[in-house]
Length: 119
Image (cartoon, rainbow, N blue to C red):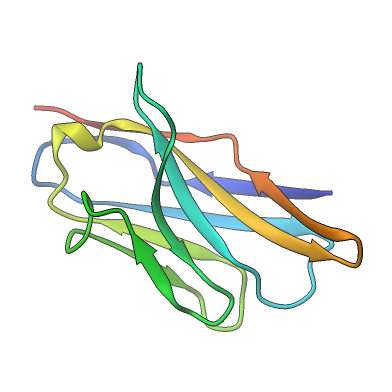
């Protein structure tokens, strides 16, 4: 079993910054794909950013140029640096990871952390 621990959410004014962090624990071997989704009230969960085991990154169009996902070198700990935050970034942010086993792959999710952008 894999557990993800997230931190870093909170309340910030428009234009401000926050950094989310996420680290998995459990039986994991090697570097694994990880990323962040978010879900705003009344909306579907959407991918915000992801990073592959090789370090390639992908972003939603709505956050390109403002958010940066990064990984601690050699570790399965990732950060989501969020700059120039907008009210529409308000959501619960969920970290995920994908672990590949002999029998297939499984996705694991964190408990979510609230990000509120408001004046």
